[in-house]
Length: 339
Image (cartoon, rainbow, N blue to C red; front, side, top):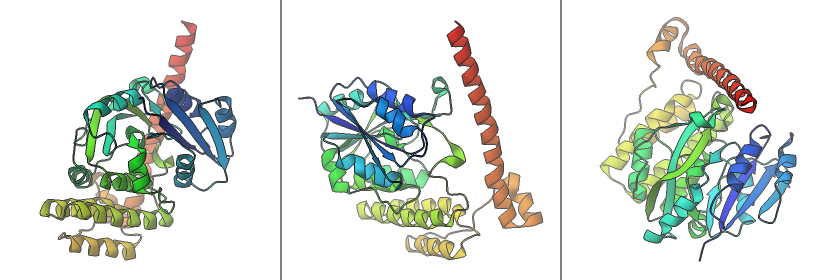
């Protein structure tokens, strides 16, 4: 029998992209699906757009603003599917994304295998999505997956996963206290409940890169720094619970070093905690290094100014690139309509 797949979509102030996202969910070739949308107190037209798609297998709910994790938990509580497909309100899936992964279940331990797929970044033009394979794009054991993620500073985008209901329930709810990297922490818990990851190349996800407006962007937010530290503590705990070895401890130390830049020098108290965590896994935390492009600013104006420049200037470049891509998107749309 064909399993029911629940596509769960939390949405907040996503009116610009939401129709495209819903179209990609509705267009899934897997026939047995339900789509559950939870509007998290949007102040724009997101809820109205969702209502236009409401039907027998597209259900729309709304709640007061509580954050993406709470909206995801609400969506799951309303779902009936044997498999869960998470989808953010600005991302897209290829039409055969779910079908390709479900069909792969015939040859594996269906209930305890975590399915992933390929993903790429784009801004406005989906046709220009860049897919860049990483060391996570293959079949892996849970411990190997986490060692590669943490040791090589990698991740898989939220919508790439297809998860059985059994594993979803065993992993527990999304952590509403995490303001960023909640997906990273959540899927660590899912991994702990799995027998391994099976990668399906043809099941593609299109990730709309949003830069500094992304929920995962930390910047100078002290609340996000505290939440990120909690996620880091949990990541280390999860990996060592699977495999407490020299290589896993080295991956933890590298992971802590890579993420320490978000706390230095603004929060020496949090940096000290990371230093202690690194010491416990056999590492030695060093003060983060600035890119050579900004090191001269440190020499003249100090660490704080250099770090601000390292954060601000890429944002400026990103904004220019994003603007150009938007104009090209509009130009291509006009040319297409004229043709």
